[in-house]
Image (cartoon, rainbow, N blue to C red; front, side, top):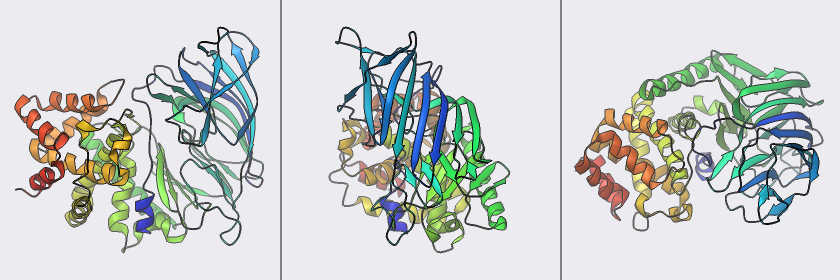
Length: 468
């Protein structure tokens, strides 16, 4: 199980940086069948910002009947497709509308899209299953539908090309119908029992879904959908998660603003198992012991609980603050992993922390000669090995910085990163927030040279962490 999680560690890639002054609004009706694997959608995207250079992403399995401008005028629009959407993950098509001059793009203030889609339904692991499953998959299994928001783009997702800014978080007022379901859930609401419900949210949310024939439980401020553990373990689970959230809140002085929803489900494939976050939802995907019950398995809980702490860390690095540019993925994952390491050390035990650090250091030894320091990265391709770069190399650098500036200033730096508004979270942003935090030009220059720009950054960090 551990190797499966390692290879498919949560992909929490996000593309925007600052809070939206007024998020777009999605209204309309969505009719889904978990038995047939179908979507029938009539959605209107309103309060669209006046962007000159954009794409509207929609899952490639969705077939539009029409795109209709509703405001400022009501008329059908011809949609062009682009194959230059380099930041799209492949699940979606990129649409845009040409202006009358044919040399620029037009975008209405309000856009209606009617579309349908049909997707495979995996009903067993003997003959009717898929080769692989992944975060952006529109995943119908024998009793549910699991779908994230941004990556799957099951609803229209607006992308500002010039600012590298994705409007996947929207306000919504959606009537959801599923006649072969017993429970419905849209990210940002609470689950409801029934076959139809009108879900609303004035707070912008990424529209992840989990609907089907399943039960759910609530303990304190934690919901568990489709649990694979009994009530006594559920209470213990809820207490554990609240202790993790309290720790992060005390260190960063930023409270979790919604109830956390844990979703336990199975993949459409036989062997895949992983987790991902679309806050406030945290999805656990896996068969048998690869579910939430892993938290209580003595053989694996020493690494599974830190893994869960990493996911909760994405509330800060990935939701409260969203990252873009060449180092955005590194910062989102690297700082979430750094948070997990600190929580592990203080709440789960120094032995677990040391075991985790030793593994990271050992696994980086063969990578250290080719690693490209933060200051030399021009695109995410420069990570070379993303797994090692964002989950191993980056948190190691942050551990070394902590040794240089102390715990108090390190937590202050993290809070500064989270609270500083910027258009691009690039190398300049990383450096400027650190320099502003420590207010010591000599120390900043030393850190920048040793850990952010040196070809010996791995050795420098290991020496500092080991006290040499």
